[in-house]
Image: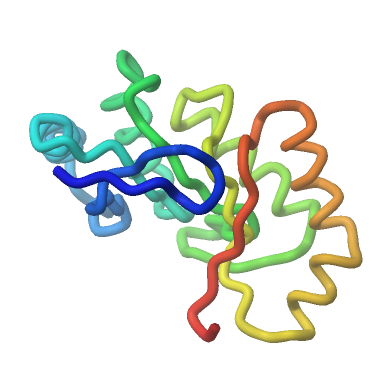
Length: 155
């Protein structure tokens, strides 16, 4: 496996990452098998934006015993509401969703906290001038998030 330093973080991540979203409605054993295959092949980077709750629980269970070997990227602003994914900037939904994410992954820190799906300048400005970024920066200050990023579908 080839590795690259991610930005100016000094963190080396595998060129191939494991994205867990396709694991929806799959049993834990499938997640365990894929995590072990990733480990065997040198993959150390996993991304989970906020899929169905069982995916997060399965992923957390699979990496629990060797969390230190994984670089984990999670997203803030994506939630699971009424059985489906919802992107939101409403803090009364963002905060419990992030806390649930951390609990299900059984981790006490997140390597990369991605502000989820910022596709419009107005959304970016609202995030950067409001409670959302204050919360994210607070999590970084507390050591819950080590690095902050933004994800987009429309750069």
